[in-house]
Image: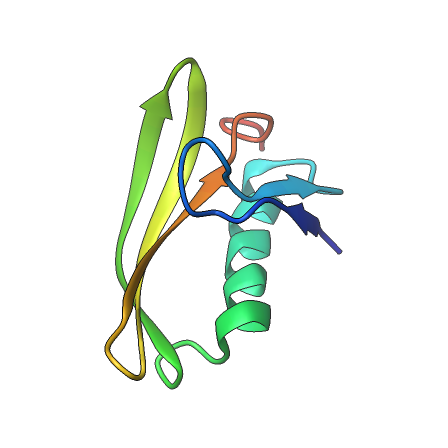
Length: 86
């Protein structure tokens, strides 16, 4: 099971995941984080868009979500260690 650190609010403080070894596990861990933090997808929150971004030599997934109450959030995950590893 992945462990998480960071707020995920920006490139400067993204969610860092440990105990993840490849790209597929990283994607699963991202959605597990969202489920743990925000609840059930398409009930408590919905995915608006997902971006693969490069910033200062690192690779990030940015997930834009909308919460049930209408609030919109962008959550940054640093996926540099897992990007392209299958």
